Image 1 (cartoon, rainbow, N blue to C red):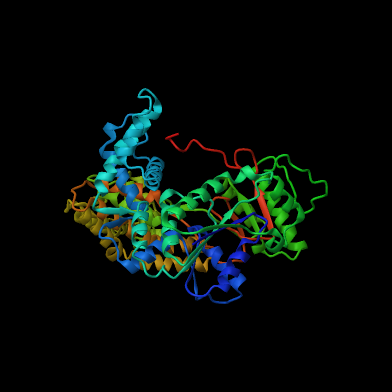
Image 2 (image 1 turned 45 degrees about the vertical axis):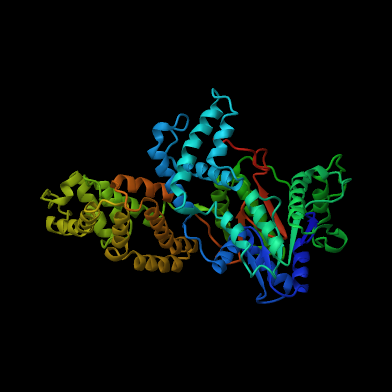
Length: 595
């Protein structure tokens, strides 16, 4: 059975959900998007009034799918994750670049690889394979730019399907396995499900939910909407109504009841919300709007000249709140849709004002010293050894030379223009008149310490041909020769002692991320003979695709995030920055090359 509950934003939806959960016995699962699981767990403790929740699971659809796979058995095919997909796409584009007509100049660029990966994922979610795409292209004017773009995409997509067929399952397409195995699962048969924080779902996700409706004890879906057709903002919920219509048709097909209810604001309205905000919730999209004549003391508007004064104005506002009111840091959140540009400015300004804050955004890892080390080693494996590669290796922090010794050696090689394979022979140049210059014997001892590991790595990786062997040598060199795991642990402890918590968290994850990327690359290329340059290019593409999320190390800080990613729940004070046209709401960008 499917129960659909429509709620407006002035309703305490979580109170409704957890009251129902509290009154229900047996197995219970709350399904929310990935980024909302942590906030939902906090809400569970709050509304259930418990210090531990045992009889309720809070899962994303993906985690629920993997739980079903654990029960029914893993598929035979090998799973390609996001990084494996993007490295495979990179390799396909490189091999087929001569067949592309429109995207030739973009081939190999990390941003383009991500766009192609996202587009392929969209096709898979909407049951569009390469054959259907080919049929679609026939309806497009063959002289148009769109035709060229779609044709290039078809070239990549058809080759992608060919390479993963019967060998791999990618994480974008695994929903088909979840749907199939849901029919076999016994654990979901007696389970009550609650689904929240969704307004719409792609067809494959919808099909998975339909399987839960068919097999589960009950499914309770909460959607933002209004059942009242006379509401002046009724059109705002058109997408919700279309989604409900699809669910109703699906329920008819599987012989399940579908009941739609509106949650009353007379019982479950948010009690601590200001009257002015309640009026905005009802009137902002209503037509004709009704003006609010009272003074709204709890809504403050600021106009500033640039992002720097805007960030400083916000910091001063927060400082005043903390000193003049009873607010704590975690009572305040900052939302900014231009988080990539403004986020660092806001964070830096807040810290200058002594405000602890957490910037909630995905971080790339190309700046990480271990990532740089990987790429440096592959550069050092080239036939001609470069001074840049050697110095980069030394400055990565994973060599055995101290900073002072590295500076001595670098000063020498810069002064005497040591280049290329000159590193492989003893240095002999010296200046007898330079009293402060180290003895040549000391310089050569440092040269030996610097170059010996690289020589060992060069000999090992150039002695094998297959991609799998090269990746294995790279892994063993990092782990056994350089002792990277142990040095990383020492670095993490040092960062924590210095109070650099975010850097410590990043470094605590980076080793496992790199190992996972190695495994995916070995799965893709296997025993294929490849040059070191190809390994370096694919690794670079894989590293560029890595986006690392962080969890706040403490709750006692101001959260800085954006509307798309951050889930802040109910919070007393919200600051909205960059509320400019095109940023709030966010306008369509030209990032998608297919539109």
